[in-house]
Image (cartoon, rainbow, N blue to C red; front, top):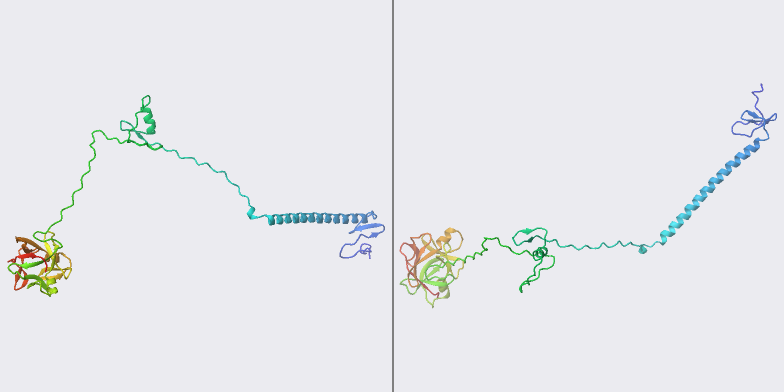
Length: 315
């Protein structure tokens, strides 16, 4: 075996071992040195340097942790002693209120033109400068400060405005003859002193009616005068004991029918009076001007020959 193949004594496989000495030399991984006495000192100095570095790191870390701890405690105590009720507010300075000055309006000069930007008091002082002011009239009242009173100036040649009087209300239409709207009446046929026009079974007729008759017969012969439904200058006759029912002609006969409205009903229930004597009239149909109320066999119909009726007080 050659000298190169021999393993030096003290050399281990795996891991680092202190350098060994062979023939008075120190080997560092196959490199030999003559300074055998200084190697242990160098190794010891390196280990001490590493230990000192670790100590410094630990000391710095500990100091940093101590500072953090002290800071945390101070913050905790400060937060614990802070009271929301003792919060301090800062009052802002109050901004002074600036009063609004009145803006003078245009004043009217003596010629009737507006002088823009000049107040009435300034214009008055300008006009009266050097003159003695006239005393105020007894009925004049002082204008409030800051307001401009413009005198009313009428243009020359303009007539004063006149107020048109209101038209008087139209006079109410009064039916012709002895009829009064709203009055209760009875109709007595001419030449038949004890008879009255009445309704019975809704048919208009004449019967002998006196104060000794029963209340129903007397109520049937009582009618209320109304302004004509088709013409206010004529009349319509409403039943006293059947309100809303009027005498009207239908198929040439006169019936007591309930008011239904419409022009046909209004024309059939309207009669125009033509006077024949004191409180005596003939009643002409409004929509059949050639026909009149007439008595035929105790009934009332429309006929070309009129019957005279005298207006009486109701029984």
